[in-house]
Image (cartoon, rainbow, N blue to C red; front, side, top):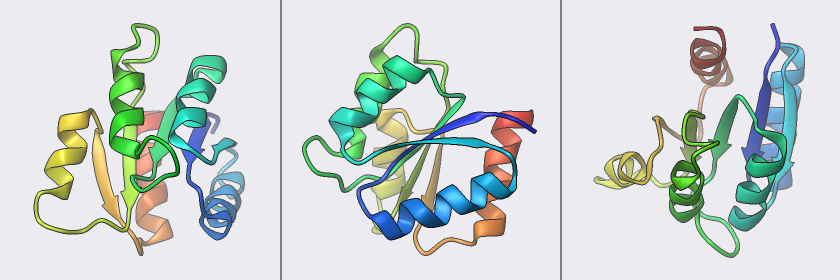
Length: 122
């Protein structure tokens, strides 16, 4: 298995969990701590998949997703919102912004990995 995953997440503990999870599945992980950095990293590294937190410093995950999806060279990249936002309508807001999937925290690492594999391995 191979694939490059951009993790846009401001909490170190969450990044470490995802880094370890994806390393165990032989995925390369790139990390960004803010929405602005996430957009820049997507442009620079052209990942195969993006995991996007919603509550971020600077621009939020919704706006970062909209900017990535507006870029002709990046719009094909699946974006999975991974967030603690779990109110009614939040999943719809994420999809309206361009997210392909919406996963709430806390999540099952096994289920998250299965979702990632579905996108990276077809």
